[in-house]
Amino acid sequence: MLQKLLRQNISIPQLAGYAFAALTGMSIIFAAFCFSRDIRPLFEPAAGLFNPEYMVVNKKVTFGSLFNNRLTIFSEDEIEEIRQQRFVKSLTYFTPARFRIQARTIPSSQIPAFYTDLFFESVSDKLIGIDPKDWQWDPAVGEIPIIIPRDYLNLYNFGFAGSQGLPQISEALVQQITFRVFLMGNNRREEYIGSIAGFSDDLNTILVPEDFMYWANERFGEGDDDISRLIVETYNPADPAIAEFFARKDEYDVNNNDNRGKLSYFLSLLIKIVMTVGVLIMLPAIGLMLLSINLLVYKNQETLGNLVLLGYRRSSLALPYCLLVLFLNLAVGIASLLIAAYAQSIYGQQLVTVGITELSTGFWSTTAFAMVFVMIVTALNVLWIRNKINNIKVPVMG
Image (cartoon, rainbow, N blue to C red; front, side, top):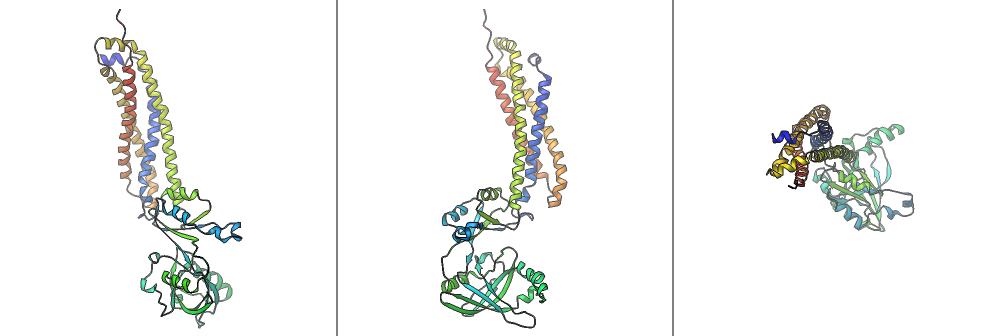
């Protein structure tokens, strides 16, 4: 009888309006959360789509660089700032040759004669993915192992060779070639033997062993030991923090061979925007529920006051309204979860194309999230109800 008495002035249209708005908001939030959990494998370093990689960072060459080469040099503070970023696992840099280099082939029936200027750079040997025994420098032997970009050989075979009537050269044949390398600087000119130890798909430079570069710069080098290119190893190349950091550094140019980091950043941003829209829809819905409760308590103010006067505890008077809100929020939450599950079944068919076939984890995580979310919304409603009931004034007996 008490519950029937207290629910006399409940507005069904107001409750229906709240339910519809809350259903829309929760469905958007739960579906976006579920999607974000389901695509997490794409952001893992071990996944095929976002493999671990090294980023090459340098400063952009501008018009001012024509007159001042030091504009493209990294200072110690700039290097340290990058090193301190949370996405950086390790940081190293290219060591350039500070001397002149020339190379000349030893002519044969298979190899055309050529003579060219070269440049050398070195990186930490741990980044070189070839057999260590093929990547050693011994001054007593005098043979320099070299790694060249595979694109250089492709440019020769499919560009230069065809237009000049020269034979194309396979990778295996190139690795059998030895050529003379002339190192010049610091009033010295010496000749050594060079050989191709391997090819690189990632670093667009001519690499030599780190030990050789230190030795050669000490012997032939001129000028300062400036750092103009960095190699940054990340914990996760798809970390949105990478794109966020370099977006603030217009003077930096990042070459990581693709736009996967940017793609993951915008994907994460899109999910956040969708969830924000859901929250913005939920806020008016919660406001509508609080307004409905306020009007309901106001209409029953005299009845509630008399019941308090008769000895009913205020918590007992608030209970019917709290149960109503609880059941309504549970119903909306369950319906929103079902809608999120339906949305998962739709986008799940598309995720199969990128190798994600297991989606149950995302839904169970969303279920736990939905329970917490509904509990928070319900708690806000209950606190509002109890506050209104506690502020009911008891009629004065006269």
